[in-house]
Length: 208
Image (cartoon, rainbow, N blue to C red):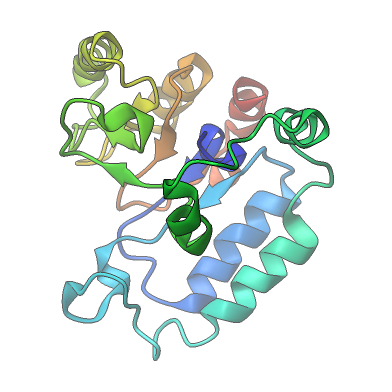
């Protein structure tokens, strides 16, 4: 079961460059009351692009930002399927793997990859990859998503508004209001989070 938040709206950008810019983005999204579930940074936040690291000079207060988001920006409430599962005691408790699972189950709650194989879908989500931003290219991920669904991978999607290149706000708004894939993430290099757009009211309705 994927984390509930991973099914929501993801926001990412290449070149946030500093903790101050990242804080400003999260605050703008919060102030604009967007349904905003996951915030990403890209590999430029990692020194020498090393996995599982971040630049402690440029992102010196990252832990404080995470705590702030968790305490003041996340909506109240619980996840009904999980609550019902606890009440009905339906979760597996006897398999041998459970002993190991208890040690790691919160360490990688959401795994996203663009390299997958048979049965991958029961463990992680699939990202289509570096799609381009121009509007005429947006149909390519649709066929890829359908193909991966046939392979049993249902948690799959592409970057809304593209991973490469930049497009206009009108095109971005059109894509977002039509976006209904399971994995939904904004990406790009321009400052393009929905709260910064002139058309943000249209996009806000689409996100909801």
